[in-house]
Length: 442
Ligand SMILES: Cc1ncc(COP(=O)(O)O)c(C=O)c1O
Image (cartoon, rainbow, N blue to C red; front, side):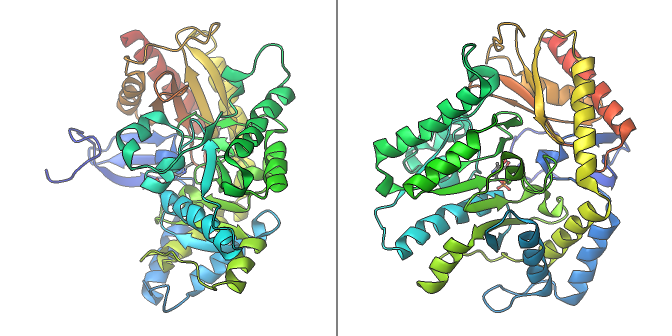
């Protein structure tokens, strides 16, 4: 057992043996409460019978049929379910196998849309600092996290990044939240005018920024202004809901809470709750009809797109959300979790902010909570917290580089939508202990 190329090549990882609701159990019998869903994936926990059975049934019917030869029932049903629940105008679904693939498809579909409209000069994207859109070269180019981009910079396409909407650090004392939101949204207009609207394809943003900022929602009015600017200059709004979508923030689509929708919306992670790999790109009528009435062919594709077992798992996942009113639980437990974390960590001067929407929660760790000064970036606080948490039987998702890709630390929490009151208590107790122990050790 020594031939796996793990991402951390020296990693000595426990072996996951089984699942029990929100717990993963390793081969030694140790139980870990999964408070981050891996990377905000496992929204139904690890032993959901409906989803498991749906995969078994699908394998018995038809396990795989290449999407250029056949459609399949699960694929058709899932597309219908998503469109019926999506914000108005999103009318077609293009299925892939993960978040990076969904976002790559978004970039190419957006470009092809303008080619079909005889606007070949449209070739630039604008996106935001401190965003993450995936690890393949196309989406890494538009991603705004410097640490992730740096080693591959010579291979990336031109990037045009504007500020994130990160009120905790960037809103100045003499401006209201609304004014702050307008100020940062208007950076989009300035950049479009600098580049030339005729050259810009689209603006890309996560409605709630996940891995790189730690569950940061934008302030009221920000996305409405962004939508207005995109419409005014004929630019597509591409929303990356890979992490924050599919109920994570308390509504099926995160953008519902900002009162807007994208022309393209990418989803993945929670779509099949981790029981199968799947991602999808929802496109509005205008984009679909332009391609349908133009070349009639979207020049893209992957071998496993529209995979029947993945689609069957996603149909079962969405059904579970509704039959058990789980998004209601997301809102209820999310409020509870934030409240109890704030209470439990109130004495800790190193907790700067506890934030988020629904069961998508960020804890920003700082050297001093009054000045918001971050810890020395040389201190691997994220690694220490992850280690302590695992030894305490807690899975959480700590990250460094919160502020600019170098400085700042946060912990992301994204537990399953099925958690109850005692799970909330267990997460709070283990998270607070792990943070306290980590801070003591540095
Ligand atoms: C917002 C966002 N977009 C895209 C991705 C990439 O998804 P995947 O890892 O499935 O390729 C991620 C993954 O964390 C993400 O958080």
